[in-house]
Length: 144
Image (cartoon, rainbow, N blue to C red; front, side):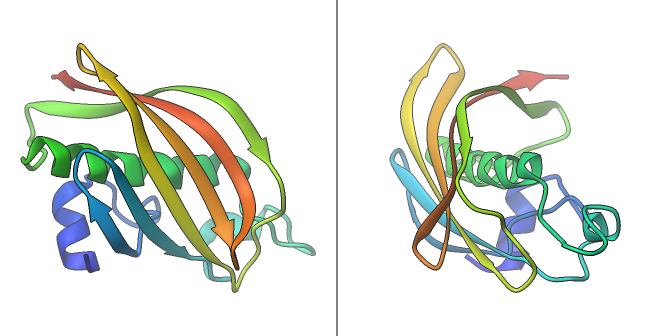
């Protein structure tokens, strides 16, 4: 899935869109998405000027955005202006290595379960096949 299709599934836009491509997607099961990390990211100006590191919270947000795409594809519909997909919880977040400019962040997200509109995901972020971060994510779709 290229960026033009990703933009149909996520309301995020620059500088908060954190998915550049989807390499694979199996509705109802899993997604593998990519964030290409560049020195041009606005957060690197202050995090940190002499040793740029992608904030861990944004790595987790990238996993949540991949989860949103997976959810909408699983439900077989596009988001609309009558609802919003909320990121409502993080459990067991762990950061294993810094993510720096030049890294290709590969986001692996799988559905753990869905119950009454609450989705639980297992997410892992990898750089060069090395685990950079992992977390369990909770998300839900709510009417506005």
